[in-house]
Length: 193
Image (cartoon, rainbow, N blue to C red; front, side, top):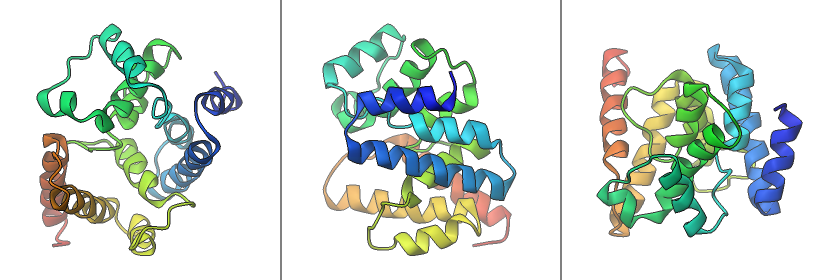
């Protein structure tokens, strides 16, 4: 498929607000890829598709994951907000025929992160935080950090997310905590902490 086909596909699968967000994430991902020397085409595809299953019914997400051989852990089973990236990755692989593991992982882990993320995975994780329509408190800081050091931007995003989830007494997936620790160790290794 070419980019325009992916755009048509997601436009059919989501509302206008989410569609604009997906375009904006793809644009931010391309900018970050250019800045950090990553594959711009892969970044654009992953950005376009990162939320491709976000607005489908939960039952459909479960069906996509089950048919794709996914076994949810306890936190994932109880937190349906974590389903869309997993279902999106499986949908992209099984329905769209994308076989690039880096693109699939970038889609799958754009919400929680994980330990050992590739450059593309980090780019999509951060691009989702800095897309043009975002207006949360601290977005300007995040946008600045995104082009200074990806890991520092990830740390800022993870601190925001983990703190918010903890305040609301919601579960925090172990992937997010592992990602946080991995980013801390990376920044320490670079002498940035």
